[in-house]
Length: 395
Length: 227
Image 1: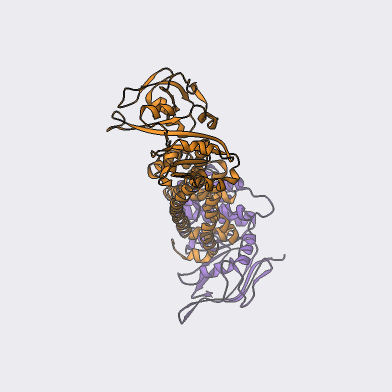
Image 2 (image 1 turned 90 degrees about the horizontal axis):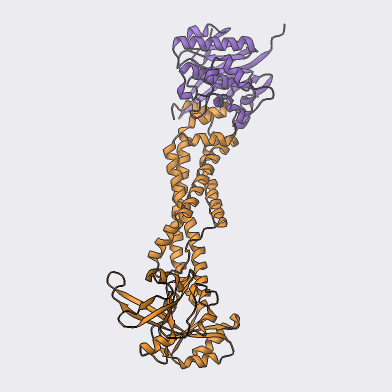
């Protein structure tokens, strides 16, 4: 019989206690895996969202840069207007590879939600916008035909929500304007999924905003020189320059603060689980005081006893680590939803990404914790003298 | 015919200190046990028999005196052995049976019997099945200790003590938890092992009838041998 078999069977003696200890380790492991998964997933999703915008710099009307950045990432541009003439100037810069103007317009829809809400329409330039969004694929139809201004392209989720297909009409709430659906996008996992795209001119003409835009998306030729280019853009009157790299950094900094807090909680949870393991194994050692003495009388060396008790700790932590990983994997969607409820801004896509490397890393961390936690009880057991244990009646 | 000595103790003293008070639990005992001999130690509580058997069985160091086991000097006067060294001696020479059996409740009868082999395996055969047959517990091989009677549990403990083929079997009150019928059975088993396998048996008991089956009975009182 091997020492690990004895250790395993020892753990079966007090099943409830063993289960509770495993549960404690599992929960700590779950928190740790989810947190590290969130760390990975959030940054990945944010990067992808930013990359999928198709441009690296956004010009908006002067205002709060954070508001502009958030509005943009949530699917649109700020609702302050700037002169469309700025576009010409931007196009003239040699650093610019591609450029597109956008206008966002919101109308109150009394049928949206329980007490109504704002339906947003993104006016785009059919000639330039698709060039920046080359990754976009259509489920049905295509970009605007140009036959009329009253055309709409729906993002995947917008189409699902409106229950519209190609050829259907959408009534702009509060107006008698109708839009004909000419295209439905495939799911992109970005803010485009929930957007209703219309020709820029439609918003400018139908809502009295001629010559106005809310944002200009700029794709630069060389991403390395972007800072110098931004300095140049700052010289333009009444515009706000939003660098997406800065946006990403700012959001990641904000999230990092929350992450430090959660990480602290995870560390405390792990420490509590660690103490739980030490307590469980130590109790088990004291309960088996005589028995360990007998094992030594029959030839077990201190190292044998140390290994046996240590193995018990490692078994507990390994099972707890695996269960915690499975919990984190199985409940990642729930965790994802919870995080979305808590954080003011979350990028689209999976926020909690758990891959094999992450699972393995956390499992190793948990097992290392088990190894450390097991040292004291194992040492305590290894130093039991058989005679003392036999003298302690029913210790 | 030459008689081989299994164990020789000379002037063994064991002193316990409690504050300023010093008590000699064993007070200068000298005893020689021959190989294949069955010796019982008897005496009232506090007479020092368990302390003596623990020293003879290398479970404890004496305060003074010398002990030689299987012609190997174990304790020389005033020089206690480290726990590790005591363990090495124990597993090479001794098998132990205790009043309270001390079987591992989550291991089956077979697993309990072969447990010492996990830590130490003497060269030669280790016939757990043969031992179970010899002790009449082969039908209980897959049972857990909780499913056995007291007599059966002690038989398992005896098998466990024998699995590594010890030269000396120490039995401390082996029938203390058993009724008279089971006590007699265990006594007969020990006698049989002594005769058929030539194992030296050292037994501590309060039971006069059980002591009668041994070759020699040594009576102790107040830490000394009473003639």
